[in-house]
Image (cartoon, rainbow over all chains, first blue to last red; front, top):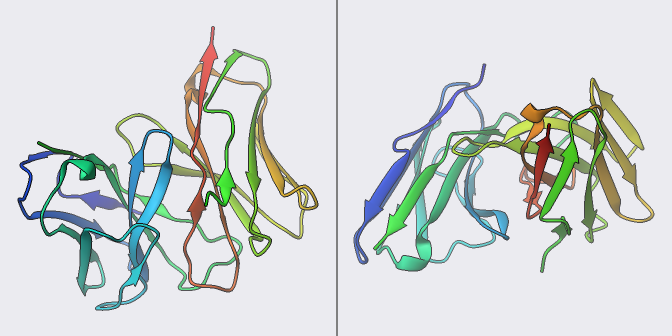
Length: 116
Length: 113
């Protein structure tokens, strides 16, 4: 089974802090994704990466950056946390670099971040 | 601009009856569609998918129907079970492009006894 793990289930940070969210997948997947989930807004893509050291902006990249130094690890960085970044953050991975039938994404359990 | 819409935020169905969850999309480039199920405090898990070359795909109690002309898909769960109570997200993507999904806002399904 594909396993996607996230470093923390719950985090509490203060406004202005730098926050690191880590994600690791164990299936040698090419693609990795960071989403945030908010009530009434569904899952929104923040950033994704289709290869080591490669990254692409998603729909809501403002206030975030990412790092992918190794294929299995994808980090989301909040440079200066703000209260509107309080959310559930979900990491996902998928095998194929190009979308096709049979493709799916595998999600981690999520990190619930509270910024005070 | 919400390209994938789930207009019903919640749905309540009795155990044993059919659950129908709906999803509409606006981007005509989307040709591959997926449904995910999410329990509280867990990540979404893949449920079923359909390609635009089909209008129906079935997997056990779950069937997805696609109406391309209406840009509409639906997920049918028959019979509904209490363990089906979760939030359901539909997602869509154009095949042959960078592998990323556009998700809907989700529908919370409650299956009552």
